[in-house]
Image 1: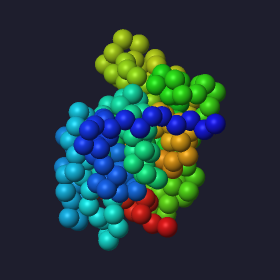
Image 2: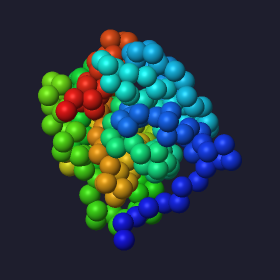
Image 3: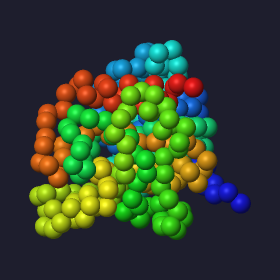
Image 4: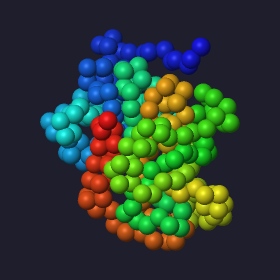
Length: 244
């Protein structure tokens, strides 16, 4: 029997964690870890309205280029994004695309570039509660094709880790850890992609992850992130979700 969690709601019918109902969310959703960033991206929607704010989950729904689209924060880390994916599934959502500003460790990636995850290293433990670590965290191929149509040229492995701060040049043995994963072909570090991909796959949802490189730990390149870069990130994700 396929996995399915119990649908938990408040007395008013809103989802227990997300604090929204099915009528308030589009079938396609962009996920962002930081709730404080949601209004910035919601400004790129037409007729955006805040429909939910409960715990780390802030949700706006509107339209983009004439089609319904929602933007929701999923919190930092694999545990809160696991909750988000499960509850969005209960609300009838079909496709998810996570966007974030992330550090790169692949030497060819430069600050300001967009990189899509082909899959992710399961360095976290939330997804292991669902299925053995031998189960792969891979991007939905139809969403990947649509990202490629938006001009995304950089594709590679992400690594999701519960304690992302351990894999920075500033921590003890951080450089050694970074070098090891870079040698194994990992391109980008984040905290949520692997759990999202695994749980979405188990639930038969389509999911993908797209990162805007903010700095490169391997080459020490960095550049201030401008709103223009975040706009490109959002537009690529929105158009990939909404194109058929």
